[in-house]
Image 1 (tube, rainbow, N blue to C red):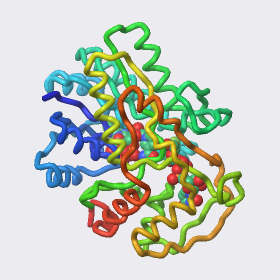
Image 2: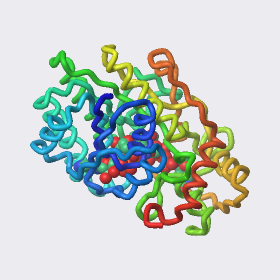
Image 3: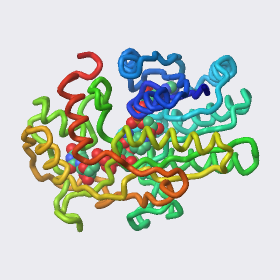
Length: 338
Ligand code: NAD
Ligand code: UFG
């Protein structure tokens, strides 16, 4: 059994990944400062998989304590989820984003070096692809970000690549997530954004539960099938499987790699709304609104490299994403405070 440190461990994607890691015989250790999550998720994880993962309250910026954690827990690999992730907020608070995400990564890498931890899996994002790149994106497409958040992810990838060039001991997996949605099928854990949701699926969920009156569809004049934005939605449990496969690949001694984690299937805003309505029986009133600044028409992965390298492909459908997101929302209208 290997001890895997999950920074940002009580966050949305990390918590789902922790379940799959436990089910596959790993020992995840969750570390978080709770800036965007709650320790209340831990008993829920235990209820799902019959094991309570260790939880450490710590800020990743505290390099000394982080090094100590890695040493005392005999950490084999780090999955580095911890980051601030709201695109709009990053435009308003760039300093906070660069500090937390970029300096945070430097702190994690320094701690790893001091504690002799050689493997890192990084949460990267489809947002790193340049607007000049043509969807479906291949991993070698040009990178450029148009928000401070996206820029932190480009920089984080670059920093790890540069260090791995000179440090033969460091091996990495860079995972570029497309649009993670859904929840664990138990309905016990899921995503609960603070305040008004920015992202489509959480917004639809809140309309369905009656917390919001209607969905604003940001633009229906894109060059897509029905004019609304197309995205590559990936069920968070498929994403969790991707992390475990990536980790296994690294721990086998294979070289470092960067892969997209997506399905390669475009789904428009209105297609997602209709699927949600069909699966849940709820009506989602919507209004067409102007385009949202900074949005692109299509974000789509070419998933071939992840398939060839890791044997990864998505298994859950858009209907599964909607059904699982709705079960979580219905059972926990106020997230972990319900
Ligand atoms: P999340 O906010 O639910 O999880 C991030 C966690 O990191 C939170 O629990 C937060 O409290 C913690 N954290 C932040 N700064 C910290 C610090 N300084 N020290 C300790 N803990 C800290 O977000 P998520 O959706 O689970 O995202 C996880 C990762 O995946 C992030 O790196 C995010 O940028 C990336 N990502 C997310 C998406 C998405 O749409 N959800 C898409 C692409 C990439
Ligand atoms: N949308 C609406 N109404 C809403 C919210 C979203 O019409 O209330 C539309 C958007 O215009 C877009 C689609 O729904 O066409 C998806 O939008 P999201 O905000 O859910 O997702 P994005 O693709 O814009 O961005 C997300 C994360 C980014 C990340 C990116 C790729 O917020 O951080 O996925 O991983 F970089």
